[in-house]
Image (cartoon, rainbow, N blue to C red; front, side):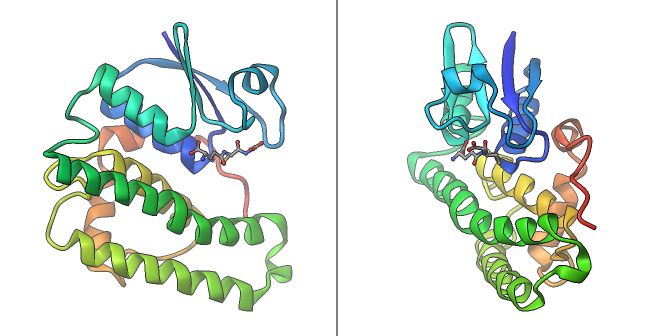
Length: 207
Ligand SMILES: N[C@@H](CCC(=O)N[C@@H](CS)C(=O)NCC(=O)O)C(=O)O
C-alpha cells in the first residue's frame, strides 16, 4: 500500500493526489498539520516538506519527482504521454505551474489567510492578481483549442495546474470567464473523477 504524507490544502500534495487518482492507485494518507514537524517527514525528506510518498522501501519527496516515479512505476504513457518533445512540453508546463503560477498564488493565499478581510493590503493583492492574470494569459494561449495541457490526454501538467487553479478558485480569484480556454479546461477538469476524489475536504478559512 502506498502512503502519502501530506497537507490537504497544499497544492503540491493536491497535485499528487490527482495523479494517484488518475492512475487508479489506492493509498493511505498521513495528514500533517500546518507547521507540524512530523518525525517521519523529518526522517524521510531532507527538506522536511510534504508531499512525501512511501512505496515499500522507497520514499520520495519533491512532488515533481513523485509524479515521474508514478509514471515510470505504474502508468507509463499516462502522466507524460507522447513523444519526447511532447513530454518535455508537459515537464515545462509542470515547472511553470510550480514556479511561476505557484509564486504569485502563494503571495495571494498567504495575504488572505494570515489576515482578516479588513486588514488585506489591496495594492499587494492587486499586484499579485495581475501577475496571476499574466500567467493565465500565457497558459490560455498555450492551451488554444487543445482539451488538455497534455494535448489529447490529461497529464502531469494538468494535475499541477488543476490543483493551482483549485486553490485560486477557493480563495476567490475568478479566472474562468476572462480566459475562455482555461475556463473550458477547468470546467472539464472539475468533472473528472480524479478531481472529485482529490478535492480537499476542507480549506483554511479566508475570512
Ligand atoms: N518543491 C516542493 C514544495 C513542497 C512544499 O513547499 N510543501 C509545503 C506545503 S505546501 C511544506 O511542506 N512546507 C512546510 C515546510 O517546508 O516545512 C514539492 O514540489 O514537493
